Image (cartoon, rainbow, N blue to C red):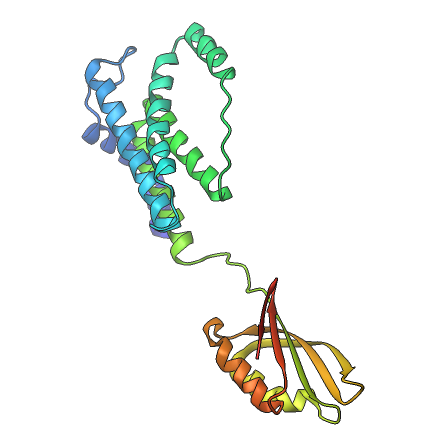
Length: 245
């Protein structure tokens, strides 16, 4: 806690030192020079490339779209250029707003997370275009790091959806006692949903909502249930998929 307090207290001094170390003194004039313009474009390109690499890492190399990744890089750079054009010029800003208002972009994103990366690329471009170079240098890598942390740690993952198990056994058998060993060996949890007499009362069909401890152990679980029920029919359903044994 004391370390965090000291860092907060020294933040303005650290920011000034970082600015003096990384940003030339010639930058910051009312009208940016050619060198600053080139620096801003390349800096924005580098930050947006970092955003694109983070998106690729989060989504995986097989699921990402090359077109979307290129769009992230180009979008942030174009935003930097746009902000530098309208900076300090109200007439140019109004004209730019009027021009962009007639453009309609229609694209369906696969996940809501894709929209967040679009805003992150735009934020990087806005910060660089507004000449807040230190702000962009600190915040963009920090947000990318947090996005990677969320992905790698699989935080806020939804609980696995329960499967529906239907097993037939003798009419005089107790399903709870009969299936208990198989359930204890393979299931994280289970809940009895219904009991029904079938085959003119000769058999009893038990229906359970179950969650497997190991999703890859479906075959072993079905074999254990079939053995416990005396090779009677066992059905495991997940959505529209049905596995019978």
